[in-house]
Amino acid sequence: MTAEDGLPGAPDARGTPRAKLGWLALATFAAACSAPPPRAANPTRPLDERRAIEIILQAFQDERDLPVRGKPVALAPGKQLEVDVAAQGRKYGVAYVTVNERHALGPSLAARDPGMGDALQLVSGIGEDGDARVLVLQDADYLYDDQVGEEHQETTVTAELKLRRDVRDFLVRAHAEKWP
Image 1 (cartoon, rainbow, N blue to C red):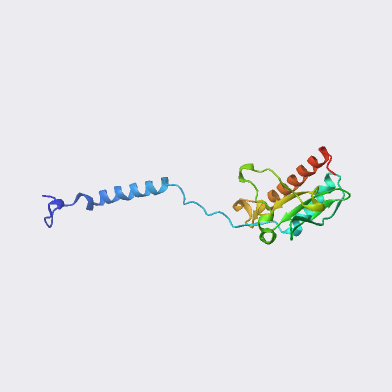
Image 2 (spheres, rainbow, N blue to C red):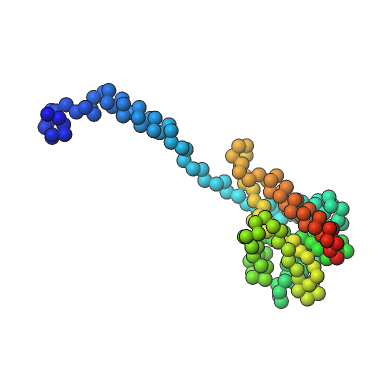
């Protein structure tokens, strides 16, 4: 007679100390072999606009372009893109666009095509600004987290270097193609 027959007092093989020890060892082994739970991504935020403009200014100087304060460029009637840094005597510049600016510009600032990957987004104005070329840098492309040590997933340095690279690539193209 066994415990499965439902008879009281029948010995149960699972209840012996040796069987309990075996189940405990199996459970411990299974837990040790399992992967750690997935970590949540660190919260990120974009580079501050003032810091971004400092980096843009430095990139202009690195490429021997004299940076000046940009002027607004008309994208659509009543919608102007604020150019943060422009080249003196030239018709090209860089706009670091924040979420508030994106909302204010609405559909007049075309969304970047996701199929273009990491390609730079250039826009031209309308009317008298029709020949102006502006590099649009979305703040959401330059994110970092506030973690320290090994917890970093996106560092400030990485975001700043990416911004500097993008501006320099734009300026190299402007020089190579002899933009006005």
